[in-house]
Image (cartoon, rainbow, N blue to C red):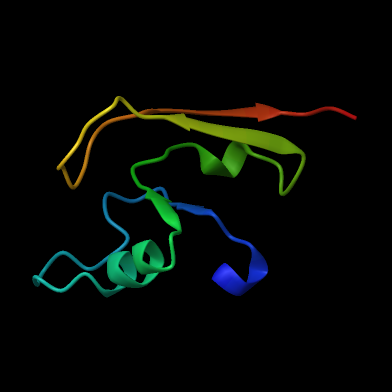
Length: 78
């Protein structure tokens, strides 16, 4: 993903990893490659495959592993 210029991965699930154990391999891999993760998104099926802008605005926190944010997508008409 990093080799293709991916900067962020967004999913419509509560966690990108399996939460039954303590291992978080996807988090480790993506965050280790400086690729951000946004979880709990909804209505992704309403977005077109391209021509949209995504914004995720988190509050300023330090020393936490998870936090809420405001996520928005705007469809861009050409």
